[in-house]
Length: 234
Image (cartoon, rainbow, N blue to C red; front, side):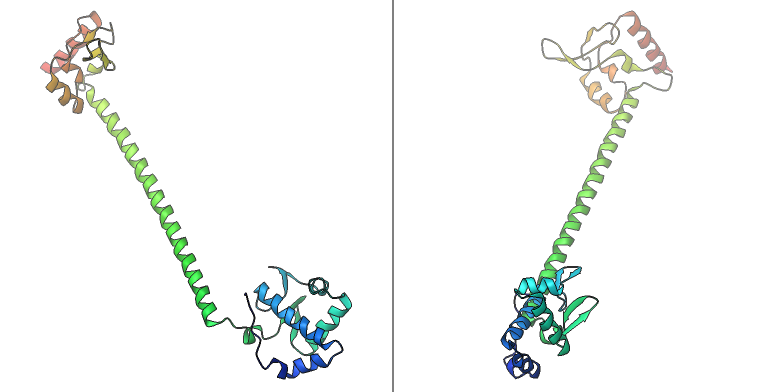
């Protein structure tokens, strides 16, 4: 709280009149007002607290208000006697705090708006986290799907179930000096020219990509192509 309420008829209050009749009555009254402001700053339902879980002692109040311990205890006892102050569970509490210091309607609206804005920010943050998580999961699923698809295409390149693997005949795409795309024989390294561009693009999707290139005539490659031809003729 940034302010406390003080009624205009405060000096007509019998308890305040009794305080003012005391020796150093003005001091008693000033300390009372200071205690009200401290309670307002604490914002713990009228409790006089040094921190959230630690109540102020008489000595600490004396230090804050600049009074001796004896003087402070005398004033506190007088306020307790007049039932303006309560001492409960080692805690000094302003009696009837909310009766006299209820939150103003305007202040209450501001507090409600602050709470509403906090809930809105928290909700947006939560939605953002959920969206991010969903995005990550979706990205992981796409990556996994692409990996499976790539593996499937690699498997499809193998020609049939007879164990003939036409992929054995070629390796990675290389560029010759004329910047034409070639593949090379995995056995002898000979550059293999493209014979059929249509077959090349069709077989990239399906299988037997090696069939789009010229056949190498080295001994090892010839053996594999012979097995391949025998499979195709079946």
